[in-house]
Length: 257
Ligand SMILES: NC(=O)c1ccc[n+]([C@@H]2O[C@H](COP(=O)([O-])OP(=O)(O)OC[C@H]3O[C@@H](n4cnc5c(N)ncnc54)[C@H](OP(=O)(O)O)[C@@H]3O)[C@@H](O)[C@H]2O)c1
Image 1 (cartoon, rainbow, N blue to C red):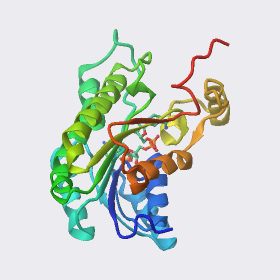
Image 2 (image 1 turned 135 degrees about the vertical axis):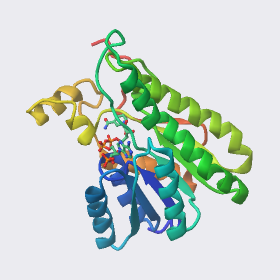
Image 3 (image 1 turned 30 degrees about the vertical axis):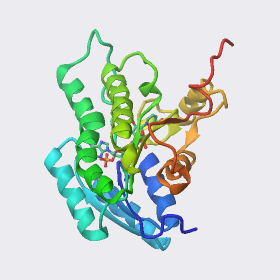
């Protein structure tokens, strides 16, 4: 399939989980993918795997919370693969669990900077070019916490609510130029982030989480990547300003059982 033929798509948080799975899907469909994260070793392995499947990929190492570093890898990616036609701003951190009563200023600032402010910087960097070319799309990774409050992590919830607001506001600012901005809202998806929620018995933890999902199971990174690829593709040409959940039915339902 070549729906993304030659198109340059930059993905942050691409070394593992949802970002890596999306990079793999897009490269299989012909995109040139730039993978950004902090771990050079993991990024290098991801790029090798994509190239081994015949795809075109390169990586840049950056902490997205460091503006200069983020802008520098975006410049380098454009130098290698040309103007960014798709930005998947997916890097995110869960921060540290603590109730608002025990929350910490430093953690709050750091989670906001990684999950929200970095996406503002990346949008400010790529959207003017997309607007000038009247072509391009941005997808951000929100969360169920973009739409709902959750206990014990005010920084994460605030950052993901803010991210959805940022996506919706930006969507309206650029829609007239045929540039699209959407938000992907993963539910409970099996990735290292979910594994890090703790416990020695990961299968039991995943099964327990799955019981909160109407479908009765957690989701897969690959299932999430398919929806990300759709939203980044021309098949979604008239979709902008949307929050698109991939959550096995959580957000759309009310379980009284
Ligand atoms: N899995 C879920 O159930 C779930 C649910 C809702 C939302 N999400 C969101 O989905 C996104 C992807 O998470 P995931 O589930 O795929 O988890 P993951 O496998 O842990 O992926 C997180 C990615 O972000 C990168 N990253 C983290 N902090 C970064 C930073 N400061 N600078 C650059 N890259 C950074 C990580 O790589 P390095 O560590 O190498 O930097 C990794 O590539 C996140 O925004 C997360 O909030 C996930």
